[in-house]
Image 1: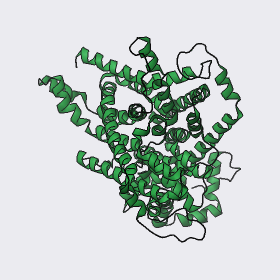
Image 2: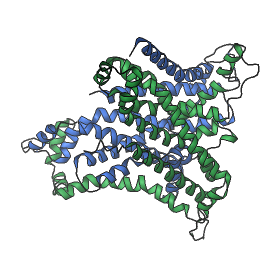
Image 3: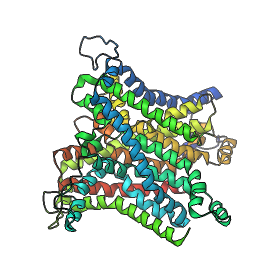
Image 4: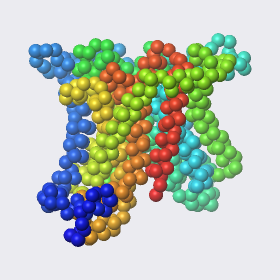
Length: 321
Length: 257
C-alpha cells in the first residue's frame, strides 16, 4: 500500500511511518518477529511475564528464602545454611507476637470505623447530589488525599498536640485546665490512620451506591416500605460489593503503615511494621528475622482478605473478558 | 427520603469535608507563624518560612531528586503497564487469570512488606540502596495501577478502528502505535500523573530503598524526629499546592470520555 510514498526526513509523523514500514531493516526484523501468531504472542507476552515473575513475585519469594537463612547478609567467606530459627523466634517472645495481633485487631477496628464514617458520606454523594454536580462534590474530598502519608500525619500532629488546635479550643471554652495528652497514644494513631485511609473506603462505596437504580427505591416506597426498611432491604445489600472492596483495601493498607505509627504512636501502641523495620535498622544481621516476620504478616493478611472475599462472595475479575 | 434525612446527610458530608481540611489548613497556617515554636496561639504572621524554602538550595535539590525519581519510575510503569494491559486484553491464552493476579499483586501487598522484600531483593541482585533501587521500587508499585487503567480503556476501544487499520495493510506494531496508543493517551497521562504523585508522596519504599540522599517525604520524616518547625509546614504547604494541581489535572484527563 505504501510503495509509492517517498521516504522523507521523518519530521512529519506520516512521513516517518511510511518511511519506517518501507525500510528494509524494519521489514526484515519485524517481518520475522510478527511472522507467525506464536512469535507475535511472544513479543507481546515476554516483557509482562518477565516483569510479573522478576519484579512482582521475585522479591516476595526471595524474602521467603532469606527467612530460612541462618544469617544474612553473609559475612565474607561464610557459607549460608538453612534454619528455622527466624520463624520460631516470632512465637517465642511477646515483643513480637503481641504487636502482630495488635496490628490485626487494630486494622480490623479501623477498617470498621472508616466504613461507619464514610458510608453516610458516600450515600449522600451518590444518592442526594444531582448527577452533574457529583464530580465537584467528590473532588472536594479527593484533594486532601493526594497529599502524602507524611504530610498528613504531620497535620494530625499539629491538630492533636499539647499546644494543638483541639486543646486550645477546649481550653478557650474553659472545658479543660491542662492540655489532654492525645499524642503518642492509640487514640492519636487510630485518628491518624483513619484520616489517611478513609478515601479508600469512600470511593468503592460511592461507586457501588451510585450504580443502584433509583427506581428500585421508588418501587419499594410505593409498596409501602419505610425509609429504614428500604435501606436494610435494598440499599445495603446492593452496596455489598463496595463494602467488601473498601474493607479489604483499607485493611491491607492500614497493616502496611510504618511512618505513621512511628510518628503518632507510643510505646503501648507499637505496631508490627515497627517490629519488622527494627530488624533492619538496629542490627543489620537480623534480616532473616525481618524476612520471616514479613512473610508471616503477608500470608496472614492475604489469607484474611481472601477469606473475607470468599464469605462476601466476590471474585473481582470484571476487567478480564 | 424526607427533607429531614437529606439535610442530616448534607451536614454529615460537610462535617467530613471539615474533618479532612481542618488539619491541612492548620498546617498551612502554621507555616506563616512568626516564631520557631509550633502551636497556638499565633501572635504575628510572616512570609519568611516560605521565602526560606524557595531560597534553600538543599530543599530545592531534594525536590529535584524526588521529581527525577517520580518521572523515571512513572516512565517505566507506563511502558510495562500498557504492555501488560495489551497482553491481558488482546490475547487469549492459558493462565491469563494467574498472570493478571501476578501483575496486580503489588497493589495488595502491604507497604512495609513491599519495601522490605524489595530491599532484600535489591541486595541479592547487587543493587545498592539509592536512586536506582528507589526508582525500581516505585515502578513495581505503580505498574498495577497503569495496567488496570489501561485495561479499562482498552476494553472500551471500538474494534472497528483496529480492523480498519489492518485492512489498510498496517501490521500489528504500526496499528498499535498509530491507532491503539493514541486512543490510550488520555488515560495514560492521567494514570502517569497519579503514578508521579504516588512516587512523590511515597515514604516507606523510599525510606528502605534509599541511600544517603533523601526524597522529600524521607527528609520531612527525619526533620520531624528532631522536632517540629514552621519550615516543615512551609515545605508541606508547597507540596500540597503542587499535588493538588497535578491531581486535578489527572482527574480531568481520566474522567474524559
